[in-house]
Length: 220
Image (cartoon, rainbow, N blue to C red; front, top):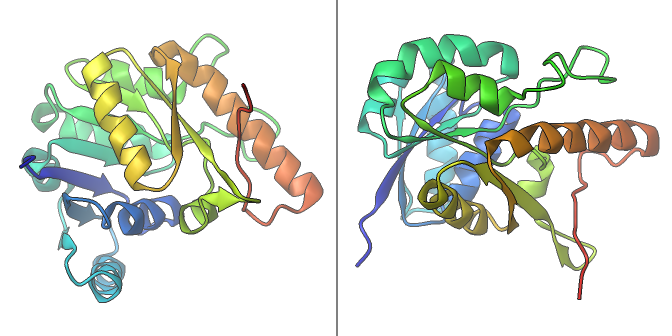
């Protein structure tokens, strides 16, 4: 029997954090949810247990403690909050998989705040040099987690990272969440993935996708 992995979700009460938490609660994982708003995180934990009584999920008020206990850490916070999170968890995240979901969008959604030759994921890797940073879940909207099949097709979710074993582990998470995982390449591909989501957000605003849209690669 496969050992149950422990996943810390930092920023679990945000739109993406709560969507990821609810989706992964369906899998054989132990979830540690943490965020600044203790009342909201207790509500989320109770909601998950009500929807899935067998879910192994608990609320923690400390990202360091959650990360220390975890095998995998999901940093579900905006890009401008990643630096603070990284400084807190750096010592307890050694050799652990850390998932970057952030898109470094500017305030007007017409560009990224990162330099052209880097990405949010690569910047997080610099802050956590001894961790295995993997990019995932950044090309999906929060609404997609409840509806990962759109127009009869599974939404693709792209994964990028430098460590093959870590990428494979995150690929399994993506499957558990209901998406079709596509391994896009090494961590520098994250810049492309973040620009893909910028484009999808711009198209969503223009065409009123209402937060329910996704990428799909069609091939023979």
